[in-house]
Every structure is written in structure tokens, then in C-alpha cells.
Length: 218
Image 1 (spheres, rainbow, N blue to C red):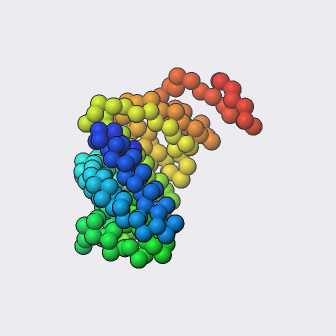
Image 2 (cartoon, rainbow, N blue to C red; image 1 turned 135 degrees about the horizontal axis):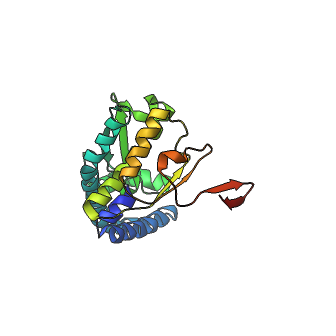
Image 3 (cartoon, rainbow, N blue to C red; image 1 turned 60 degrees about the horizontal axis):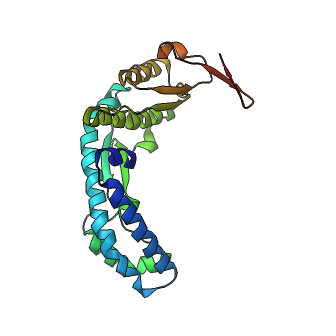
């Protein structure tokens, strides 16, 4: 997710770098039992709130692409939500203050954007608990392809795509759907495969065979 935010939010890298630097300093102080660890809280709050806002905004922009792909790939009925990494009953500043005893005990900061997550649910449960391996792969692919679609639509950027054995755990119908979707991106693709599905990708500009660490152009 941060890969996409980095591309669509120009200031994200700066805020992420400064947040991570302050987080490392705070955690080091906690491990050293230094009572001055809270001196880093202001920087965590300043940059952490911006990071969280940019992530939320980007996920909102991504959702139309993502939900359309979930539907297209086997009609997956999934919902997507963003977890900030701290209790939404409190601000980040309040959460850091309330977690002081826990942070001291663990020697680490337990609230903040570094604990954020994107959660997929199906029928009210975590998607990974009820989806088959093939469906999980389609969901993961949807996350990646939707990001490339947004990047192309909003920024005019076409990212290169590396595919590792796309046929694994997919039936023929879903594999064809996947390939059709990938071809519509009109981007460079490099694919590996254990079986010859090359025809699905149109004629490749180059084909290689890898065996026992040796690469041979065909």
C-alpha cells in the first residue's frame, strides 16, 4: 500500500522517513529505560497523522478499482477497511500517552501508523479464514492490479510487472481473466512459468529457459 501512496502523494516519503527516524529513537530510549522517550512523541504525532491521512485518502481512491476487480475475478464479495494502528476512540497523541506503561514493558512503541493495516473481509470474517488458496491469490492479484490501474489513471505511469507462475492455484477460466486484465494495463510484463502458457500473453519479445541455475535464450 505504501508503494502506491509514495507515488500518488508527493510528500509521503518525507513524512514516512521522519516518522521512522523518530520511532527508532523512541524505541531505543524505551529499551534503554530512558525517561526522555516521550520527547519524540510530538514528531510521531506530527508526521504520523499525515501518513495516516494520506493512506486513507489513497485507499478511498483505490477502492472503486479494487472492488471492480474482486467482482470480476470469480465474483468475490469482499470489503476493504483501513486500520490506523491505534484506537479510533483516541487521537494518536492520546494513544501514545495511554500506552506508556505497555510501551515501557515491551521496550517498543505499540501505537501508531507503523502498526497500520489494510483488512479484507468476506461475510464479516477475515478473508484469509474462509477463502480458498485460489481465491486468496485472486484477492492478492486484485490488490496489485488495482494499484497499477490507479497509478495509470491518476498519474499516467505504467509500472513494469513481474509475474511468478501466474497459473499456480488458478483454474483455466480465472487464469484467462487474469491475463486479459493484465494485458489491458498495456505495460511491460516479465513472467515465469512451470508450464508453457506463453500463448496467453501474445508473442513475447524474448523467451528464456532456466535449468540448474543456467539461463538459455530460446
